[in-house]
Image 1: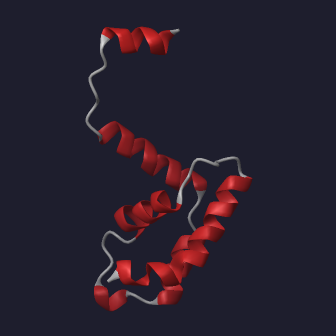
Image 2: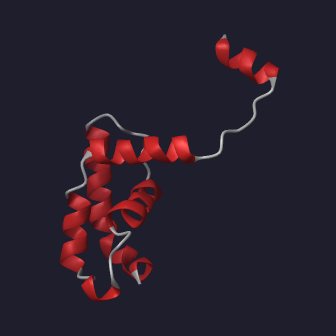
Length: 93
């Protein structure tokens, strides 16, 4: 259901992206914010509770600290990739 509203919510998402860029977080992408919203903000949202104005408010109220905490936890939970010794040497240069 939420995926069908993505186009309608895009202006709010782009506005939040612009805010993050102004704060110096240029690497955040539209899909990153969408994933955060689905997995964090709207994880327990029931179909009966979906109202466009509430979703827009959720988007516009996202704080950078909240998003960065989510990204950090996601990174720790992701399976670590095995690096070869050559890769490690290259990273440590």
